Structures are given as structure tokens and as C-alpha cells.
Image (cartoon, rainbow, N blue to C red; front, side, top):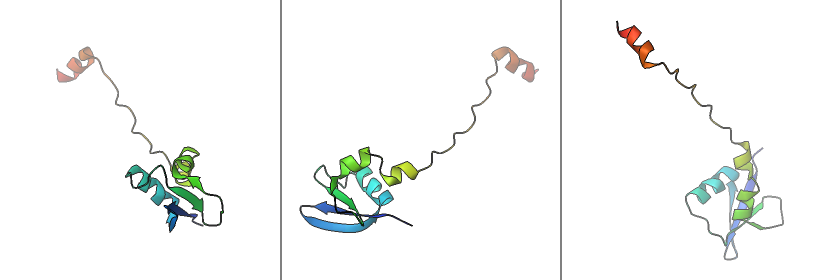
Length: 84
């Protein structure tokens, strides 16, 4: 089940939005320090900055991409052997 959130700016409520959308808004600087957020069933507002810092659901559920294995380094002497 998706969790939805509402944003409040200047006493006007917007939403619902997915957590991932809010994180994206924040990355694009759409949100300000004066914006507030609450969950769909919540009654307590907190600043978006607090929500992000506390590990928003979108941040905590994102999986880290696996890195490619490092290339094997060979010495110049070994490289010369392959050229002969």
C-alpha cells in the first residue's frame, strides 16, 4: 500500500503525493523551508526539512544500485607480455 502525504504552504494544503514525489520536489528546489508535510492519516505537521532528515519513507525504501566490479589492474611488465 502506498503512503500519501499532504504539503501545506501558506495555510493552503496540496496533495496527496507519494513520498517519492516529495523527495523529488525537494531535489528540484520546489519546496521551501516554510513548507510543512503530514501523512494521509496524520494530524501532526512537520517541516519538509525535518521529514527528509528523519529518513522519509521514499529515502529509506530506495535500494542502492550495485556497483560494477573493479577492473583488474595489471603491471606494465604484464601488459608487455601480452603484446609479444
